[in-house]
View 1 (tube, rainbow, N blue to C red):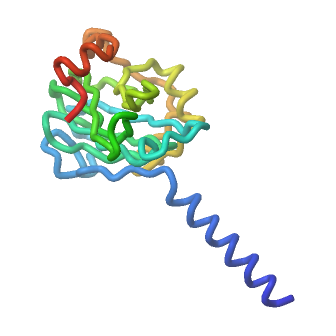
View 2 (view 1 turned 45 degrees about the vertical axis):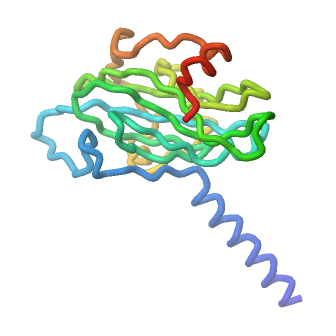
View 3 (view 1 turned 135 degrees about the vertical axis):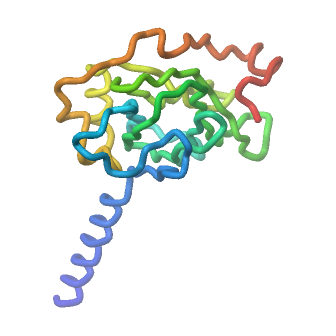
Length: 205
């Protein structure tokens, strides 16, 4: 009986550890556009609040479910697990937000790295919600679009995600008064058609 209780306790502890560490983000605090230090209350807000949201999906996509790598201005910003969201404070800047992931193509034995990008202009004092949206091209693989969404959509996506890092102290669910950026702060992204993908290779690397 004691052995059985011990096994149950061990199983519970294992599940607890998995639940704590599943759905997390690894932020590159050395990125030149990221503010990682604590700000004093009297300091001016010279940055944008940027949430990266990657909700948990029901259907597995194999290797495409692994953490994605998100870059900005050719430098790694963070790695983000499925089912998590992160908050970064990014300085006034402009550049491509690019999401890399691995996926399988039917005509390739080994996984390949693919990417999708949008150009963002981060305006100080504004709050951005970027949905790392999975696009399933079936036999052409899976990629992730860094798609801008509004506050209402972000709240819905956050229910399928776990806050990580700084986002725990400023969770989307608890936000009230926010200043969203204008639509002009992000470029319009055309659909990823296969004839464009293979001709210009915009997301195969």
